[in-house]
Image 1: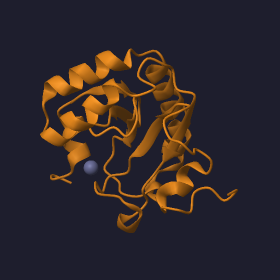
Image 2: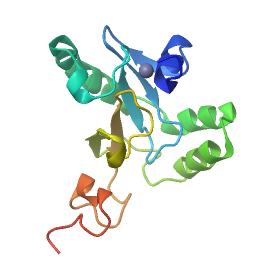
Image 3: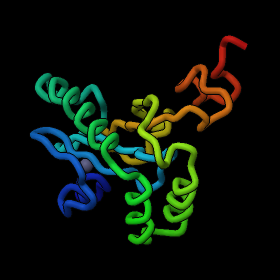
Image 4: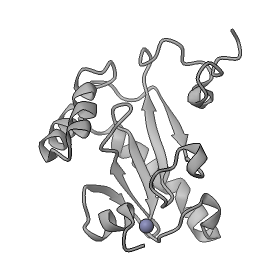
Length: 159
Ligand SMILES: [Zn+2]
């Protein structure tokens, strides 16, 4: 717990843009798309299944609250600020890509909301976090299938 990235971020109040009783949210420093955020329980827990019933109930307004913030933001300004943090070269590269992204001056057209529930599913920080990933028409060539594309070549079942 002492070593947990998200516990440290919460303790240091680093870049938190949303907070309620159970959750906080920050923007991913390695965004896959403009506005990519993470909703994170304040309590250190690993799995979605570790949430209490009360936290489950609070997850819904946390997700909708975060979407509301994303939709009201100037995303270009957001990434300029994150680039100025100079976390590391990789973060700067990811954020620079956002500045010329097809969605940078738009409100999201849709979202993918996802959890990497376990290491084999891609989890690298072992403190539950819900990815809120805005989607924009034109951000990929073939959007049919959405999260199914986590397995390359298996996303679009209509082709
Ligand atoms: Zn933690």
